[in-house]
Image (cartoon, rainbow over the protein chains, first blue to last red):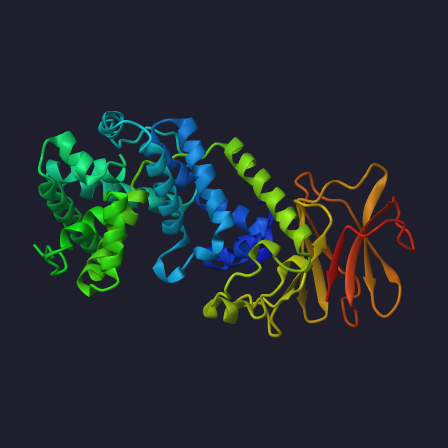
Amino acid sequence: MLNPLRSAAGSRSGSHLRVLADEELMQLVYRGNADAFEVVYDRHADAAFSLALRMCRQRAMAEDVVQEAFLSLWRSGARYDRSRGSVRSWTLGIVHNRAIDALRRKSVRDRVTIVQEGIEEKLPARERTEVEFARRDEAREIRDALRRLPDEQSRVIELAYYGGLTHTEIAQALDAPVGTVKGRMRLGLAKMRSALGEAAAEVSS
Amino acid sequence: MNVRDHGGCERFGEDAAPYVLDALTEAERGAFEAHLQDCEGCREEVASLQPVVAALAAAVPQGQAPSPLKDSVMRTVAMEAGLRRRQAPGQDGALRGRPSWSWPSWRVALGVAATFALGVVVALALSGGGTGGTRLIRAQVTFPRASALLRIEGSSAELDIADMPQSPRGKVYELWVKRAGAAEPTNALFTVSSTGRATVGVPGGVRGVKVVMVTAEPQGGTSVPTSSPVVVASL
């Protein structure tokens, strides 16, 4: 039988913890276990940094955001609630919040420019495992769903989510009524929800 | 196309989408969150949109976090973990006074998951771990970054060590067991790999053993410990 302890050999500290699921590791993080935290970091740091870099477009700023986010995770591990989603989603949510805080110290014009640079593949990436391949496929699928939206809908979603603009700032930037911006957000997200739901159904059928 | 209306809520329904996108102002966010307490339609709308937003987070081109970033984060974490241990040996001092946290499924899976810092037993039911199951005991280690886990199956046991510094020049690590009285030497002398790893079987098993420990000793080992233990696993 494969020994899970041995199979983790070669990894760094707390290798025996690498057999645990994220949710179990978060229990140890809550109790102040630095090794468990390191495993969580290793699993999610690349995704966290990728999101931060996409939003900030500056490596130094993205690094600050990721550092703040993970230290927040370390210090407030107790706030993780598995009923509200995966550790990955929770971690990326913290990164998003921190990046928004950082972005909102920039001018609206700067943030619009940042978003206009697009979300094309520009980063060197390691592709080592099937899980990572699957994640990259999934990421492409979501980007495709976003691209298939009418421009005015994808644009407000990108400006809000990746640019950290509020709906009123978007309304001003696009010279559109606030109600229209909110409506586009709602329609766009609802269409993506349908598209992603259909994709998931196809995979599972 | 099955596009929902906005939760059927006339007053706040349009705020669900900007809320999940974090595009409301602070004041609007506060008002909407207060409203969510009372409006089931908006709660459902938010819950149905949140997975889409989680997908947006994962949709960005995937790159690699820089290594120095991890070093920087882990330095702070190690320092704070050490501080917590010193503040409250035996428990996580920084977390004292917090309300108890309910994690039923994890507790069932891990059995007793109590004061980890002191090397208390963690009965970990590893799937397929043999007829009697596997018991893991987290050992105390004097080196902050190092960790050690004693894995027991029946009466046999192995010590799995990670991130341990090399033994001092001219010395090796020696494994000892304690039953009723003094530490008894074993013939397990070892060094760790360049990455600080070692897996050492406990000669003779752990029947009747109360403590498994490691000291650094002169080459060839000794019959009584000549230095303080660097690893202590209490059974």
